[in-house]
Image 1 (cartoon, protein in one colour):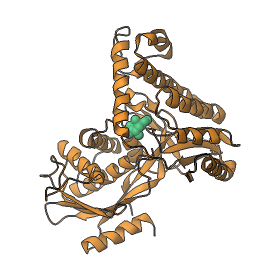
Image 2 (cartoon, protein in one colour; image 1 turned 135 degrees about the vertical axis):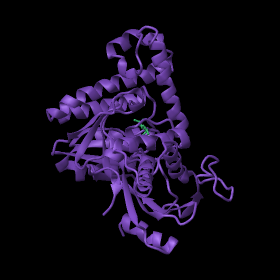
Image 3 (cartoon, protein in one colour; image 1 turned 120 degrees about the vertical axis):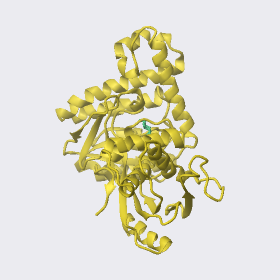
Image 4 (cartoon, protein in one colour; image 1 turned 180 degrees about the vertical axis):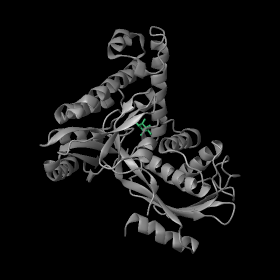
Length: 391
Ligand code: GLA
């Protein structure tokens, strides 16, 4: 059964009526521009063909009642219980419910109506895998409340509200990339976003190239603390570099030349983190013209360099991600491979010659499994459209 059919039939089972709507919001994969969104840089993600599906309708009472099909759990909350992060009976909200509750909180804060709803949701975006399962949940609920609340904002605004939920309610100080990609995805296109101006365009991926996503199946705990700490190191670097470069607002404003000249002024941790960011922003600038000219080989080389930088300077890789990229980079047809998303576990993204993609996937799975003992999940992914209602 497809996931949309599943949430639809579960809704009937749980609420003894038909769902009125089904919302779908995709996960994303990022090709280049990692850990630069919160440094005002450029990112190059695509929405993927894995998504969160949400069957919903208005609630007849004052409370919102949700079933998370993937957990077999229910959560209840209302405008009154939101701030306390509890359910009406006083019990704490389960972790998964922080995302929908956070969306209700962010929308309310923005003065948008969030009528109580009943919903069942399920996702085939693997959780904690670097493919933005949380943004896909946030955007699915944002779409639902937009429909029931009778208001309408553009997809970028919807993305910002999802980000606000995650920053202000869930407590992860993430940038805009994931929610943006989930909200604004376009079929068969990469998205190129300037995270400072929030202007974006779509970019074609050369037809001979496939995007292969490889899940190490390794998940790390406590990543939000590490993530927030990376962000603080970048902010410290901006403050210290600002003593010599007055007027800079973010690492986006620091050229690689200035950085190399001034790097010694920074303490080690901030220096390593800032080096990754400054050079990664430079790589995304270069990628633009490489893609325009169809130079897949040079683009792939930037992807490989990005992985080394995330491993050595940003220090967000892990042994399994390193094995997955090393094996991939040695295989025929692979132009580039690196970890994607925040890191610490999860998935790699691979740029592969389309004709070699099947064999590549098979060989990568075998090579990874023989070196780690873990059975990976590898699939060829299609860039998909952004969040919206089905049907
Ligand atoms: C997570 C965050 C994004 C971005 C990436 C790293 O996915 O949600 O905002 O910072 O990590 O590029």
